[in-house]
Length: 192
Image (tube, rainbow, N blue to C red; front, side, top):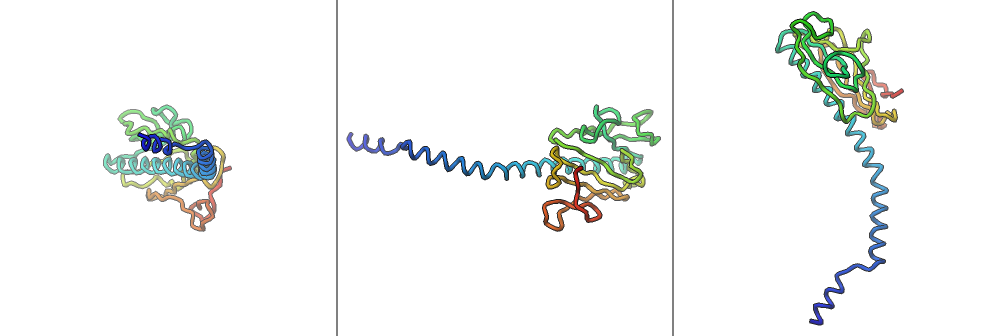
């Protein structure tokens, strides 16, 4: 019996040992939290841009499959074009190319970006705020890019999706390893 009591007494921690352990844990957390926040911001940007790339691929495949013009535009309500790109977007067949769902047009998909806490911009030839895909899977003379910028406008967390006239989509990369991705011209992405 005396042996059992002695073993039980040795299993606990002293107050000093507990305080040292908590102190070390707080230091480790303090060092790792900024890196964790950085990782989360990069993942948010990547997920939003990848979701957008999937929407463009869906529009292309829908245009080819239906053998008709498909429009992708920003939408705040999921039913008509309007609002900001970060609000969401809709994809629909657009038989008369008027960027409205009417006559025999069909809403194909509505997409929102719940993880996006920043701004999404579309810059294109002739600055049209929509993207139209022909029955061949090409854009209607609309090469351009979608740029995601976080709320704090930090270009290190910016991301970009580049689209050429043939409808090919590619992601901007950081080719010079400075922490900021470059656009199609090789210039650093800016968030002004």
